[in-house]
Amino acid sequence: MKITFIGATHEVTGSCTMIECNDKYYLVDCGMEQGIDVFENVDIPVDPAEISAVFLTHAHIDHSGMLPKLYKDGFRGSIYSTTATGDLCSIMLRDSAHIQESEAEWKNRKAERAGDPIIYPVYDMNDALGAISLFVKCPYDLEKVVGEGVSIRFTDIGHLLGSACIEIWLTEGDVTKKIVFSGDVGNHDQPIIKDPQPVAEADYVVIESTYGNRLHEEPGDVVEKFAQFIQTTLDRGGNVVIPSFAVGRTQELLYSLREITEKGLITGHPNFPVYIDSPLAIEATGIFIQCDRSCFDEETISILDKGVNPIWYDGIKLAVDTADSVAINTDPVPKVIISASGMCEAGRIRHHLKHNLWDPKNLILFVGYQAIGSLGRSLIEGAKKVKLFGEEIAVNAEIKSLHGISGHADMDGLLKWMDGFENKPSLVFVNHGEEQSCEDFRATVSERYGCRAVAPYSGTQYDLITGEETVHAEGRRIEPKKAVKAQGVYGELVLSARELLALAEGYKGHANADIARLTKQIQELAEKFR
Image 1 (cartoon, rainbow, N blue to C red):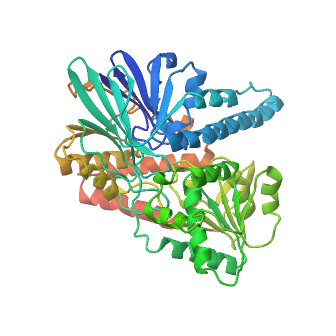
Image 2: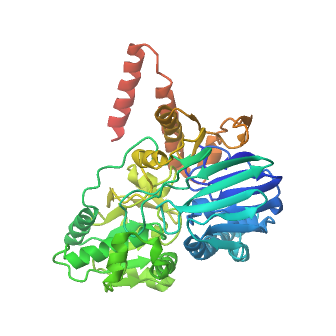
């Protein structure tokens, strides 16, 4: 009975963990890495054909995105998820495959001209369809036997439609242990879906730490703030461009826009156009509209009872094909554009940024987490120029973030979920957070609950019967040149800044004069380039 950590160890994306029980292998999540990879991940240590099943916490690509690759490499077991997660993955994995194929085709046109080797997609549409065919959809709150000595139960974790923490019971001989994977813990009081539900007991807990060392800003009235951003931008004749995750975040924005319209919070711009420019978001919105009412919170159910669609209203325009998307940027009418991807790494949002970043009348409004190394992160951190489609674009547009609608719990939210355990676990594994956040939250958990808490690196293995580490792995940082190859000059800047931070942290305990001298030099450097 063992657990091996593979992905999202001291990093936020690429979730993947392996469990071994009765000589059978199981994965919890099989996600894709996004942004710059800081640490190397070990490969899945067994042949994918030997894996009996995957237990999926939710549909986001950083948790599900490598399932088609797993299928391509021989996996033919079952993929257990909630019903809504399975429905969302049916569109998201196909969309991801389309992106893989399109990017390979684009790169190969350049490779052919340069005489370089052909590039193959990570996986194709057939692989995605093969993975989709393996889904076994389960309801919340029902314990299900999935293998010899292995049972699971999904509990609503409030992060995304269908998202779940997964309770897993493992039995070998006369020993039974229970391990709970939090998945991504949702924020409280978010629209549409329920708050995270507690779990009473566990021997072991694997918990995320995306915001493990910080608190969200006080949101105030998010709808009112959103309306103010729109009002100000439309008044000056600009566009509001919102990079948004197609699944979850886009539907929350539609919920808020319906409320803004109903309350008349935007004046002087009757029927201002709102474009949804993401085929994936359009399909996902259909799934939200048609899903079982039990997935929704009480407020959303009350809106449905009045015969009102909570995430739709007259005035929303859909950009289905490429021609529709192109036409948006030829229309001079001030507008709101919601497009994917949320971190600006792919998709139609990059075209909208190309056409809108240069104009100071426009607003680029971020509404979700931006991973290190992503284009979205660089814009939030003040990049003056970015490269899109081989062209350098000046960043003159206003750049803002709408706080209060994060899909992730902050430190207090994570601890609130941990407080739900009546019998505290003997060992807590902390993952799915940037390096400092992960380590800080590990220390917080250990101090607050008086239990062992560790933040394992990729390749680390524990015996779940004894609770002892059986394979120790150190974090293997990716060589800077390798890490920034796809990120260019900006990637080098980010990594250099990390080196500076590491230098500063290493000064703890030095003479005060030395610390003061380094502090002054950093402040002078920051002031010079501010």
